[in-house]
Length: 155
Image (cartoon, rainbow, N blue to C red):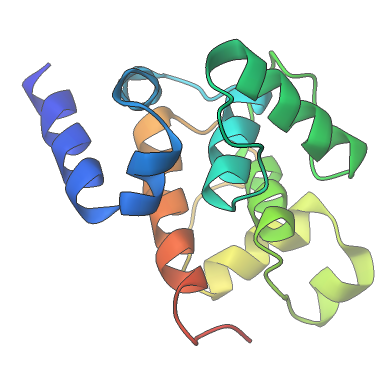
């Protein structure tokens, strides 16, 4: 429990975009999550990318975010299913309008979104793109993306 509070404090202090987009209870639930559902991920990603209507929270925000993401083709799994690293990468790249390399530009699918995010060091390490994403890892990736989006490093 102590480590969860430590991460919560770190994210609240160093990630104001996340802190203002989600309330503390939602952040704590995400930190404890063993896997991240598609609707929950959509809620955090679209909220951080300022693509969600302000004032929405909880299940209503998750439904709205999932509907936006799925109708745009950014997410292709049911809302209650766990996301893989490559599905998460596609959602993030689309929501933040991150440009990719040749293969991503040609095929525009989760596999190449994941490979592009690893190449751009937004996802660290050499993980399997098919592995499920857990809460702390998801927030770490989202934090890197927010920092990346706020700089002039975009390709």
